[in-house]
Amino acid sequence: MAKKPGKSTKSSSGKANKGRERDPDIKVTQENAPRKKSVGPVQFWNQVISEGKKVTWTSRNETFASTIMVLIMVVIMSLFFLLVDQLLRIVVQFILGL
Image 1 (cartoon, rainbow, N blue to C red):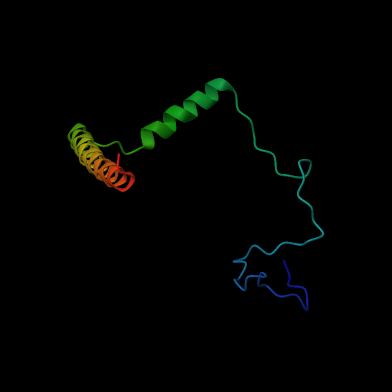
Image 2: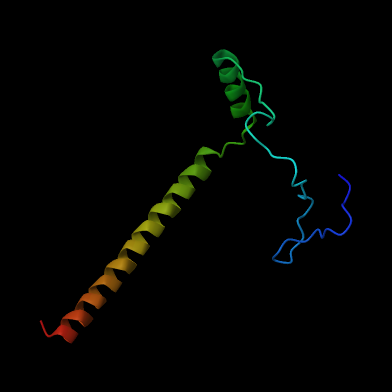
């Protein structure tokens, strides 16, 4: 797309559009938008299985270690919030004189 004379490639915030300049006369609507090819359910399922085979799955040991780390962090954060909650309860009771 050729640049039009007198038009700036910068947006109102001063940042460059990064190649996303578009002609304001062209409106993207449902009718002129590019259409995606639809596939049947069998071909879709075959594509899902094909993509699943490309995934690099973690090992059982790595999954187990990650799960243990998450559980430990949940316990630590639960204890932290319990402590903060109890301290705030004591402070509020002291202020209100209950």
